[in-house]
Length: 613
Image 1 (cartoon, rainbow, N blue to C red):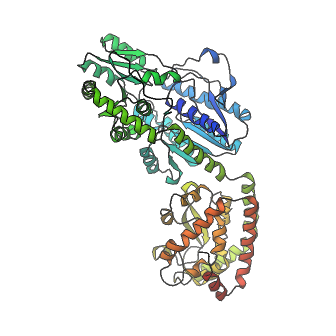
Image 2 (image 1 turned 120 degrees about the vertical axis):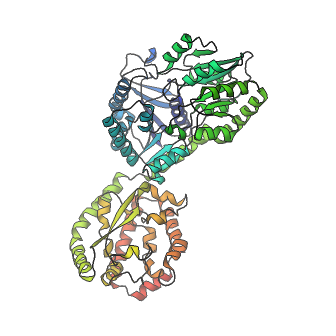
């Protein structure tokens, strides 16, 4: 599999996104995949480009077997909205110059934030004819708005438009917490497109070691920015009573200078600052801690966040003082690996630090609990394997140019050639009963995206309010003209328009009503990863489905017997689908439809009794 990562952040920069992307990329490479990363020159968060990369506009390097294509960016510290946007947009522009060098791509992984990188992803996806998986670590622009970093109404509206468009275009939207799944689903992203893939940690690299003798260090290691609200640590440090406690803040960020100035100005002697540490030094640094502190601002958007610092602290067996709420707080409590206090509450944080410092045995138990929980649930190797499976599914489900060309080559001429038939049928429908000529029923398409399927109306105009979504041959709602259209399958011809629009394919799983899709199992939902079709193996096998459902309770029979068998036929076909098989199904469908006008109802009844299953 040929995988392309498109990301603004990448090592040697230090940070959660940088580490996660590199670790996943190198594990994909170790599994045998060809992995290329398109990124900028390292400069986050200080805005300083290291000497080894300075003075270049483009370069290629290799990191643990991963090919890295770097392009120039406008380097600026992670402070000031206008400069940060300029930094983001500069990478969008220069990343496109790596298109030829990136080579053939089967599937892409796009990291957001920053959201503007999605603009480059749209170009890459179209030029490479490759689907992309959008990894959303933080919901933009919502988090930027809540933090006060984005205030301009026009900029917010444009960002929200881009966000929605990226969700529509992405093959999958991957998020690190269940809460983000619920949040995006509530915002209109199809549930079938959303995937929860937790962040994790290299449990072999991050291992517990003995803490050196000396003061009890409560450590924060990470970005000093708007989201963290590290001022709460300084305020808590002034309230802590234990003289053995020392607070150590490691890292860089937009707020670091102000924090250091405050600590000096107010003579907060038990707080110490150290600069960013290389990734390789982080396990040893965390092992110096008695406990770690993980704060977040008291904002609604952070209720669905889980800072990566939690996983690293758990892996090295250090208890956590979590000054936050929501899912991260629930994780700490569930794992029994730390103490949770309300965010932005200095007295509560100080009290928790004093209590934990006074009880080393409790701190030890919490550290052991965290290590065990991380090994079981957050192993980076397991998470990389889950990502690889997801990428393989996306790559396999993409519509090849040949298949799409076949759809258009057949559907467009067929629309023209069958238009007299459709016109005649439309007149018959109109003369036979009151109501519109066409029926536009709700269906669930690829990635769970709803659409309207086009058919000639074959039932009374009020049919959808007077019975089930499934229809038996003896259904009294069917009109006289409708019985003829259904028997000859002429009512299906308008679906060629769905094919031209890209909502359907000629061959694929038959699209189902939303109420039926809600009943799908996890395995059956794999069918939502491809375009639904006008015909397919299940359509051919159940071409006389309505006769089979006659008598008794048609909807119960359909849901309990027919639908599961149809879905299994479609799953079996997808596992070995080829263009040649598609052509074969099209020819068999054409033959079956051409024979139907000459088939008697007795023939249909006999076929219905011999349906698969």
